[in-house]
Image 1 (cartoon, rainbow, N blue to C red):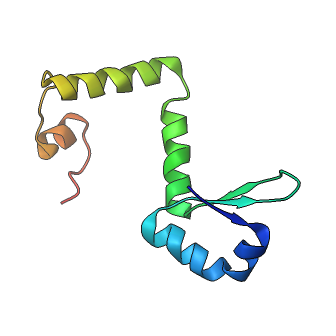
Image 2 (cartoon, one colour):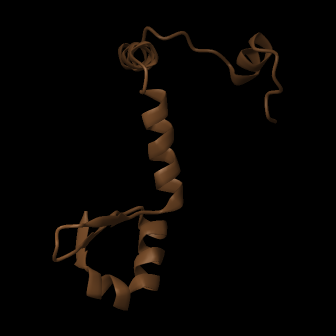
Length: 94
């Protein structure tokens, strides 16, 4: 994470916004009084919020972690996207 002072952030706001959007970096804006803030792309923020939501319940977190473990060990069932869409009665997106 890059850290800049409030003065530096003010002077370079547009380049910093471009940087966080293009490079997906996070910029910590450091205040003298300790009230620091973070600048990140809206896309990264939304992704973080979604991840937090998915892991917000113990049962859902356990289910997701079990799925990741199955994928790593090769024991996960491989399903064609069209078959998966048919199972859940949704359009495949193609």
